[in-house]
Length: 308
Image (cartoon, rainbow, N blue to C red; front, side, top):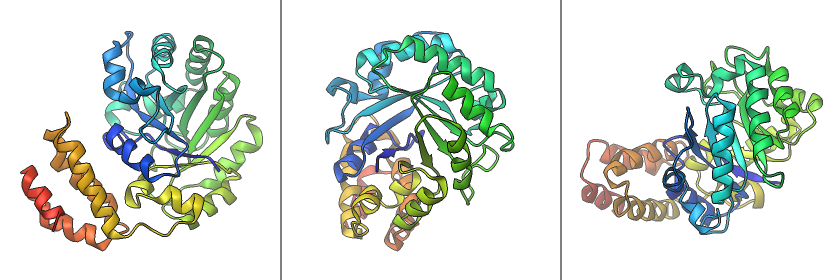
């Protein structure tokens, strides 16, 4: 089983990637998306979003990182894909799944699922530009308004030369509401002849097994579930027990060190509260901690509460 850590905008940055891959179980990480419009982005932009490029595209734990690009212009995406791989990205991922309204309004992310030809043109341009030894993958949802184009979209991506397709088993309209329609992935897999990775609504080992069975996919991508249970990849792959709260608390303190003394210190209170929002799904203690800190904005006061 190959497990990928999902790209989650505003959540899974290089700090979270570092911490989760140190816990183990992940075979690949995908970055938050880099929005491409009409220019070749400076190298500093790639390094800022993916500092792992300075260490051969690997996290401190040695897990490869792949840069994700989002946009609608195949030529500009291709140029930026070449730069990303030259800087050390382990391949390129293309975002056809982001449901954010601001992104979709500017013809990025999931809205492109209304136009299979555009998907084909983008993937084809990137695949032709990037060295053959570099993987080009795409992440899509089952559709925008509905699933009527799911098969056509997946086939367009495959026909354009993608090496891998990740499918989040919901439409844009579904958002993140359960359930995920894993059986739809199996339907696509029967007709599309490239490797497929299943994604969506995997919170436990039982969910992972059900997803694999219903999607007919061995390989999976974990997103929100890995934030709710930090060792979920190890639970799924190696049957570890759920990380105890004391272990999670140690991670929160470690995360505090990353955030407070890094370039993102000013965002730390909101980031911590955001993570606790996921953790409280699995840990009552996270809910209690959240209630204690929800009105706090001072970093030292937050850290004092975590350390109690």
